[in-house]
Length: 591
View 1 (cartoon, rainbow, N blue to C red):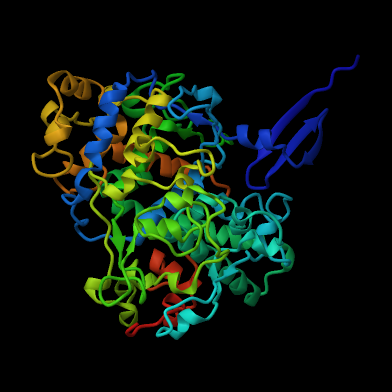
View 2: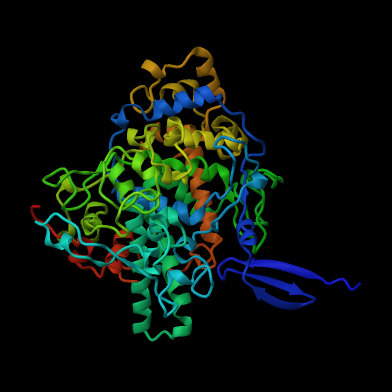
């Protein structure tokens, strides 16, 4: 029998399998299991971590969501609230755990974890596998270059004429246009990652990126780009401007600037180092540990210390309610847009249909609700989420009391996050989960336990060459004594529980405490958390085919307020043609 030589490669940005058999290349569409296993989770720590007891985990979760996060102040200096959900959009670009377990809390080995996203900042959550791939073709217009967008449905109140009409281009495209299926099927967004319809804010941001892409296509057509090159050139343009904005603006809102500058100027010091880099301070790369090297052409992996802990910082930034638009606000509107309503008016967690702003139990039934599209009165007013004054657009600046800031990054979450709708964790229609499993803090801590994540003290000790100052016992238990979680009242810890928490501090909690205690910029990741996030972002940009890290001389080419720069507001202005009536379709005035 003749033996054939075969090599197999996954072409991430083309979404195809390239097989070379006896020197002859052949490409094909990957099977689903090949696509899932082509991207891997990894572990920064050399060893698994010792987890706190289930009882302490539950007590810690309740303490983190107690009192509505009232002690959790606004970010200072004030960060526009849109960046909270931009962070969620980025998370969905980088990582998606598709691992299935029989019961939430069951142990999961690293080898069994399935990563459903490319761990590169390449916007595969926006493009899928591209217009030429059968699994992604439905996301694109017939021209194979532009992304489909959806249309809202007319709603109320009658005193707001703009709400009483439908608005093409202001909802995600939905499967209702396909005409078949259940209510849940028809509401399904025609986008690569349904999690971007998990709440209304991230859904409207995803739509903004779709509009941004389509405007870039129009821009390239005006420049004479041929149809055969149009999509690839548009994707390259969008991805690089997106990465630039993340590097120069978003990261500086959440991580100490000194750490970001160190990583992007001098390179990574511990995560997937280039092969010629000997690791920090001359330490040799060590197999199975944080100093592993990355060979040229290697795809990035997704460290679970990032996905399960460090990058869950955004949960602390969420507000309990928002001044959303002309109709839904606390200053003359019907009611403010609380988290319950922002979940309700989505397709993945909600049903796009009016209902209780606080009791979300009806949303556990995926067939509840009549609407198949977003009502027009829920279109985002982006002027309330991002600071257009920074781009010189005084005409797009709202009153300070109408503007939304993030909450500060610390160990407190607002209490609506203790009672999530089942759709937000992919459990709709699967029975009623125990109340504690609806608590976001509990879910985060339990997920870490399932994968035996390294603890904060453990990882600081392993990365001692980076000079990170460990938190003290008092800092872990008390913070600065006033801010963040205070273990008092029904959440008071016994002496053995205090000792357990100090010795085996869950990594997510440890990183939030670091930010809370940041003396230079309270509420920014520093130390362990700051280094993990900055290095994973750097590697994720490096790992994209279109990369500002691999092309360090690249500078933005699209119109912007400051030449050679590009911010999130510049992106929105370009996406919505700089028009006030598109950035705020409901306009201003009484309701």
